[in-house]
Image 1 (tube, rainbow, N blue to C red):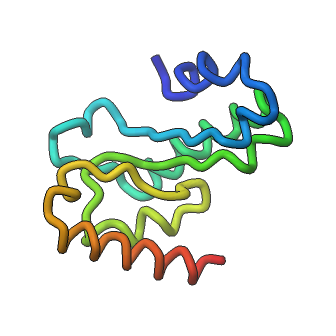
Image 2: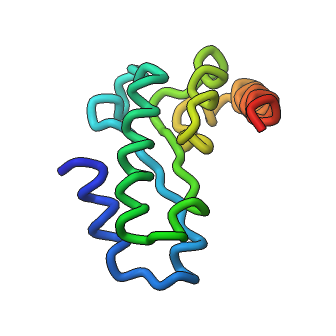
Image 3: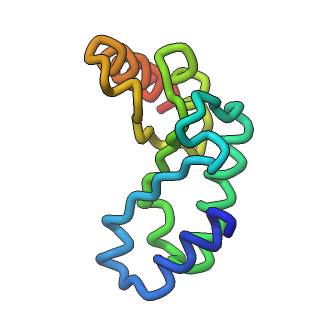
Length: 117
């Protein structure tokens, strides 16, 4: 099932108030537990496909939905990933086990997010 199909299964019955609280986390199946990370463009393409589908199912509520990317996010790739227009944040996995790495990811993501706004 594509990420768009999975999201549509969840969002089709949401009311406007529920949609406003929605957060979608996406991780490519091939990235789960592998240490492999999508290219920034691949992460953007998936997030954009999800966002575009949300526009058809949620209409105006789609802009408030946060789309998180998960899949071997580290301090080495976080700035490139967060620079993508439809990637709003991250679902951190293994890197969260190292508090210093997690803090570094958070600082870099925050710095990059501030510079894109």
